[in-house]
Length: 230
Length: 409
Ligand SMILES: Nc1ncnc2c1ncn2[C@@H]1O[C@H](COP(=O)(O)OP(=O)(O)O)[C@@H](O)[C@H]1O
Ligand SMILES: [Mg+2]
Figure 1 (spheres, each protein chain N blue to C red):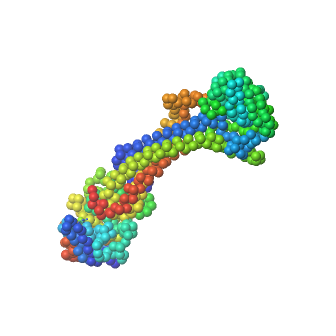
Figure 2: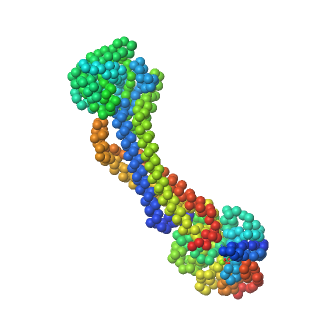
Figure 3: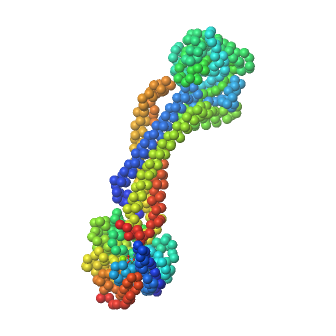
């Protein structure tokens, strides 16, 4: 089954009197369970593509299908529900709610999903352990290192076992040891739960974990190769 | 506990000084509102008492047409037995019978047309201040004595003094000629012009003889223990009377429409002031919430990207405002209650007031009337306006675009 299908996507931004093609007639299919790395130099269109896939931004033209449903014509509310139910997001950085503790940050999304309190508590506790944050449940973001914060964000993205995880430069603020741990966690989820991963990065260390490497340049795909995990 | 509730609560204290300042504005205005409204109602009570306790009472039993067309023949038959019956059935002493007639009062030198009231000397002092406001001489004592008390201005106009004789001329209930010579027993000073110039009181027994009343009178005056109980008493009296269809009970607002109008006029100007106060508080809340929403744009972008709908985000902001407003409501009502209660016990006075009310034979202080309504009406309005003020910042969130919001820092 196709988890993500993008057909002929175009997105143009105007900067001053210049048109920038962030997506330029881009098409790509991603099957369920794939582990894809989007590679490009900065400005290549990775974030724009992830936003289009996640329904955060609507492309100027083209179609986006998620799990067999066309999403580029959905309403804001429908898109929000889609993200809440099917997609886990990990953003570059600073994406926790500062007044909530690590565990509360993870629980917050589940509460919106309507998960009962006891289940919320157990699941958030377990997932924090899984990402290696046992004992830090009651810390607030300001009391954690960048790597720890990022792992809370990952825990929040995967706690509900979404079908699809979109991660935008998840290792940008991490040291090599922490980023290796994070990528191993992703790999494990991918293998055990068949979760589809699309990770945008220009970090060479990350690319080693990908089973499929998609290289972009100026909003187009220039290279698309399968590779075996290192 | 609910994570959303916790989030709202903690968001509130992110900038605790700002939050406290906003709450402070609410508490201040609420305290002021509670006190002002309580004082205002205390003043109204005093105004009403001033007017009603002088003469008209809280209510009167009359013939149906008497109030609008004051005629001799609009009588209450057997008025003294009726008053006596009410006194025993209601177990109240503050009930008195009266008769009324128009007559010409003549001294040796002058004549004036006046309203002559026949009153029960024993009970009149319990429904009216006039017996207590005798300046010279004494009040009436015997129900059949040939005497009269008059106001200071009338005494001056007639050039008459205590002990002098006064000739009364008028027409009796049957239309016959009524005349009597009575002695001035006392002179009262009520401080109310119309009363001091135009009214005289004589014993009801004498009055009934002179005007051929045949036991009838024109009103039974009732005074409730206080104004709050007047309405209930009026309903009770009305049901007691229903067997006797020929009579009605008129409430104080019908007897003294001027008082009600004065109160209404004062209320509208006071509530205009309160309105301005409330609007100022609402703007301070609007400002706080707008700031707090704007500075969290990035964060809101994240939670929307996670799948939170703008409507729920708006509800979060409303929830924060509700919490803040509720603290303001509670603290304000408590502070207002304490502040007001102190004056409820000790009274509130300002220069010049003592002399004014002393004239009316009443205490020289206003006692704010602290009721549930005066305690919570103001704070509740502030609370609702606070919520209304947060609607705009909450609605703004609908226009938030997650990608753009996350880009801001
Ligand atoms: N909101 C925007 N306004 C203007 N230009 C934008 C906007 N978002 C992205 N771009 C431009 O689109 C191009 C692709 O950006 P992006 O998708 O963020 O690339 P990447 O994530 O690969 O660095 C860049 O040239 C960037 O400057
Ligand atoms: Mg990017």
